[in-house]
Image (cartoon, helix red, strand yellow):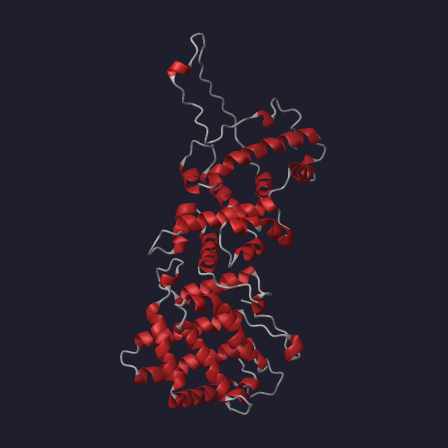
Length: 432
């Protein structure tokens, strides 16, 4: 047990100079004639209590931190005043450290600041830049300005996270955005890792947040209200991976222009051309029918690889909508990518996918697995048509795969069905 009462000094009396204070510099003429100057060096081990650091970045007040410490098994019997002194001393150290947390690369390189190892330093930085998903969800689609800062108390009330922690997370994302905005031709994840010494997973999350935020991708529409931060984080990764250039940072200029041109060409070839569209539908129908189970119902065949009878009925045009619905779905799929370079389309892309693709499948009683099988089959059988009718078809085939695969993955993640409208189907979205 840590016996703070027997300590020979009080940690709260330890005062570290603020980094902004140039306390060691003075001019000779400022000294009094009868003054004696001494240089004293006192060295004591500096210990950063990880638990208190966690509470500090959460914005907990002193009395709550003290109460939590006294509840730990090894603190039973410790005097409250001694624990409070220890906590106040640690919090003072945290305030000193926070200046350097805003400059993590400098903090890692200047080893004379604190006698901490590399692993400990990187752990502190990683912990300081960690965020709460409900809080970050509130920052999506918002400008990182003073108006959003005034919204922080409302964010705290809505999420149950202390205002101080919400402010820290807001300032972190704003700081990362500001220091990364002038870089061109460098992947944003690499830039964040280099400037802020963050791990790749955390830097990737920040890159996704900035992509959605700076491009103002709307995540607040009613049809998207029930999705969580993890869903939008996944969608951002798909948008970046499939529809931007390989060296994409986070701006509209990084939307792959050749991809959008090929998507427009493919829409005309595969959707607007009636002969090609009929040929494609026939090939897809045959392919899906071959996947239907030949064994009696109740067999052990995986439902994720078996199409539903509703999908086959749609492809065989035994429904009222038939091929018209299929044509509309494919037209929207290609149009989204063809127009993704426009800010209005990119801003509304998630809502368009939910309202015009996901809801179309769901309204016909189809599952997310049916949608996935449909897109996979369309990709397979469209390649033959593209190869036959487009010279040097390799770029067009690549664009076809990127367009429909990206749409499929976004739709699968955003797939949900409302039980009040679609009966027993109540799947929110499949596990990834």
